[in-house]
Image 1 (cartoon, one colour):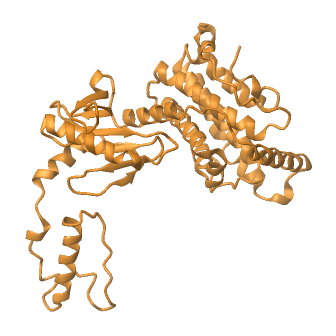
Image 2 (spheres, one colour):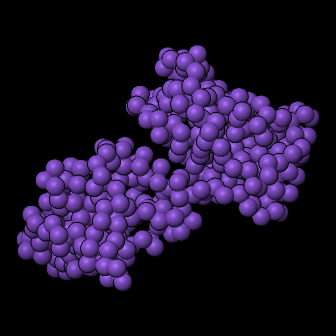
Image 3 (tube, rainbow, N blue to C red):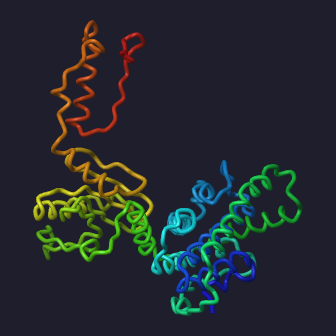
Length: 388
């Protein structure tokens, strides 16, 4: 029994790695994370080799391939987020030697099912999986110690994969040297992809699960353990709704028991910024209760925003802050000196050119009154922009 039977006929190498990930899920979480990542890497490299519509990036390692715009457009944000999550989990397990939890291993296999479904639906030429196909978690319940892989074995397998980096680039470097068999395959795959894209994809990709898993992973990478009841779905009162009650998706607590940050999670298909107002209301409730306003984060799983609404507008970031970073951010609210009271060093600016002081004061206003983090100063040549 396996959830990946639909891969066997046309994609045996992907099938083999996916089934191994499935087998290991309840036995060796580290091995499961590795084989899930291996299945994604094999599938993605197959796609770049066979699909003439995908453009090879500057490198052909899996990270570069996943983020190549032509692949990201083809896969869609939901599948891209799943593949990125699996690859991140694999890297943590193999390269960083971080412990993989059983829950993460099961999550990786579930997400792999959806990635492989998209892959087969897009590129299979003989038979595509039915849209109604669903993941059966019962297959993961088997336990067999014979299947358990040592960490050294997993590391060796990873080394074999990395040794192949560059082969794809060399193969596709000169279109004229492509052999007839590969040319025929690429023509067939292009036709299969075109036919697949012409039909609406009715498969349920369970995007909310992906979002939560990826946010959990990013928070743990920032040092948040998320192991206390108050970390998730924290109840707040005095919300401006009929019930007066709300639940904060994540609260990031300081050592003193006060909230340092909150995370509002939105569905993957929605713009993360749609969670901005909801997060602000949660921050209001927490500030009223604890006397400290938390820094606001909101995310849809692949786009993440930070908003310290006491001073700055929201801005997009790559991940979440650590505890000491949030503590410093909140500490600066009280300890920050105003730029307007800072004396300008006239030995550098303004002694003979008073317009330089006006320019500096204008930038200060831009930062302090408008809450901006950047400014562009445009001055004529010879007006002394560089100073000394």
